[in-house]
Length: 122
Image (cartoon, rainbow, N blue to C red; front, top):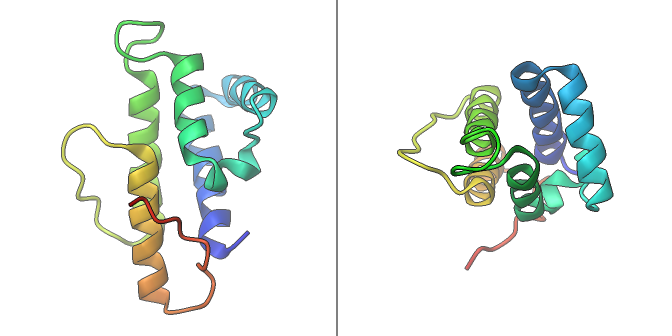
């Protein structure tokens, strides 16, 4: 796991606990692990993480209205703060795409060979 991925896992953990509380975060992590997406694999499984957040928290008119997209956006904002990058997203975000763009920006800024696993989204 590279430096960016370690930071992403840390931010996901801290933000989830802050927004939903320790107990709820642990429930979510247990659920994600059962879905083959433990916390330490989130950087590799961004789409799975996002989809499973929606499954457990709901989206649209299901369950807790809009909780998953709000949590994802909060994670992206917190990651931007950690990386000292501006948060420039407008409107709803696609979590995986935002994280990949941030990783590319981070890697370009650091100019280190620590980010060789940036996925190409097309």
